[in-house]
Image: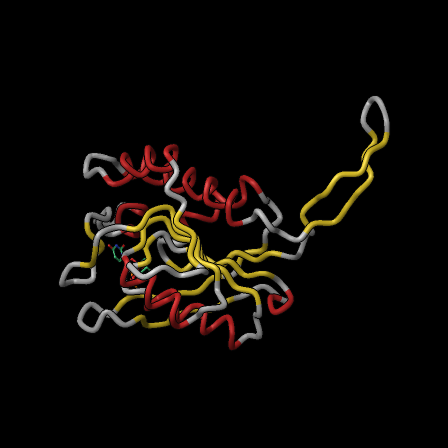
Length: 212
Ligand code: PRP
Ligand code: URA
């Protein structure tokens, strides 16, 4: 795959360990949900490395000191329904005050093109850093469309956070939105003829919500 300056592939042993269990056909809904949350927390640690901070004064039992804290109201997470919902708690574990917007999108089974059906974003999102959450970056169509929607609402600083990506999806998104930083835990081999990631993990929404 071509190298893109705006793409970070975490490739970390602890994340890899969890993804191995996540991929397995034997992993049931409860464990799948917990793993998506845990992997998201690990991704958040990386993607928030340069989160906006402000210095505060803290009194310890011994003395006063200055310490940085993340600026509240500076970050909004935007899960793409349905599967992105599984990542929300993973971000909130580290940054509980992140605002949440929702974008509803599903892929047309024939064309694989995203169809929008819902959009509700926090007030003032145009002044925040918006992080789109979707565990699967397959063709990249859903992520690119979600980011288009955020840009139309005036968002200037946007990031994408996914667990498993296909090279095709990374290439499409990185090319369509070179200004958007993309964080993925792992990049897989390719897409199959139905637009599923190989080896992937199957349908993330169905596995998270037990719908199949
Ligand atoms: C899945 C996934 C992404 C999208 C990725 O959603 O959660 O949103 O596919 O594919 P793309 O990169 O090719 O656009 P799906 O359309 O299955 O909807 P669901 O989450 O409601 O099941
Ligand atoms: N959406 C999924 O849930 N899984 C894939 O492999 C591709 C798109």
